[in-house]
Image 1 (cartoon, rainbow, N blue to C red):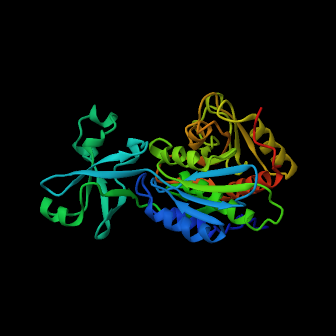
Image 2 (cartoon, helix red, strand yellow):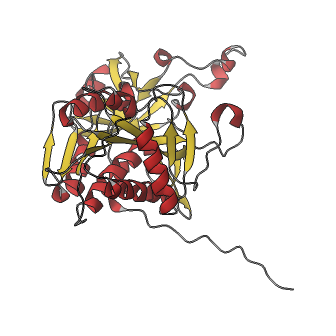
Length: 362
């Protein structure tokens, strides 16, 4: 009898820049750890590099080039913020960003404090202690808490302060082949793409454009970093890079969501938020370079930095590239790292194709 063994898929080696971003904790308004990672990897490749009052990181090459192309990926993530400590030492919180409440209870969380990182556990009343009708309901935010093992309020207050923030304690791992899982691929993947794209473009000898790569802050609470950075950069053209919903999983109605797969390449958005020149050129580059890609139709301003950048100053010719992702806004988001690499390839090809007069006017 012949033994048929299932050969393991070749393991993908994740880039250190990306895994360092994923390890960094960065709830909106508290992006200090991701800022340091972006500084470490991108600053040395930039001709100029500066920060602003909202914490954006702005790296530029080809300062005298035309047109000016802005690349934007946000470095913030979902989080929890401590707003009350009760007499028994339990921490109560509010959410930063759009949480699915079903995901919150029973998680280990990392609380960032002046004393360093404190481990906690999100708690709620056990199912055994609920009435039958209560078991069918999602707990409200005020009905959950964080347990740090403190004996009372006095001990808890020595460790944690009002306004300290927490993130889920879910790190990066490879699932199989090039498929990875982590908290906060949304949008550390996009921040990595715009940073790595600038690093690669800095090595190009014939680049005629000015490239400005921005690690934006506070996207999860209203595209705030992108709003002010776009006004400061004043780009002619812009590409926002975020994650998009991979719909290749059970319980997905493609009539409502469209059909997008992990490994299918970057999702190129088309709709009123997207400049026609930008869409057509990205599609042309993808086809020319044989970069796998997918098309998304969005009938309104997107829920990304693209919506803010498009409306900055006199208006910006904007595009959106999305990296397919499963289980968005959960502690375990799933991405194909090959899609991330293909997104970088597409941006580099796009930037190299630009001529001085091409500014997206139509």
